[in-house]
Image (tube, rainbow, N blue to C red; front, top):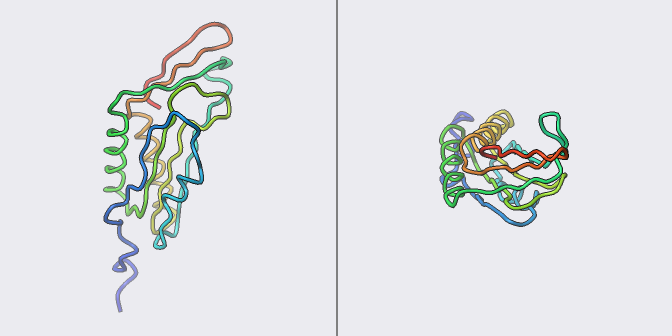
Amino acid sequence: MATTNDHPGEQAAQDPIKLIGIRDSDLSLDEVFRAVGDDAAGGTALFVGTVRNHDGGADVEELGYSCHPSAETEMRRIAEKVAAEFPVRALAAVHRVGDLRVGDLAVVVAVSCPHRGEAFEACRKLIDDLKHEAPIWKHQKFSDGTEEWVGAC
């Protein structure tokens, strides 16, 4: 009898990257969640980044995201790196650009793996690497009239 780890469902999928995108319209949790559905996945982790009303002790009045034309390609590269490190069954990541309001969804990522621990770890790695490596920039305007650009997600 084969051990559990020998079952094909315990392995990474052949093509686990199901959805990568930069959007100038509202993001959908349902779209991302549906994209990572996989019958062999015992765990799905989803991260949602929202626009908050403050940063660094200052009130945020306006916020906008912009990106380099290569952003989607870089997101895919990062996703491929995560998929190579974990037994990913399905992975999805979408990021918003343009002007956003407090409460709007800025980024949604999800990862499905055979087990919950792997899903949590892979999802954490995905959002952390996107934040640090994807050429996406945030421009914040504060209530005191100051503003700042923040590099990557």
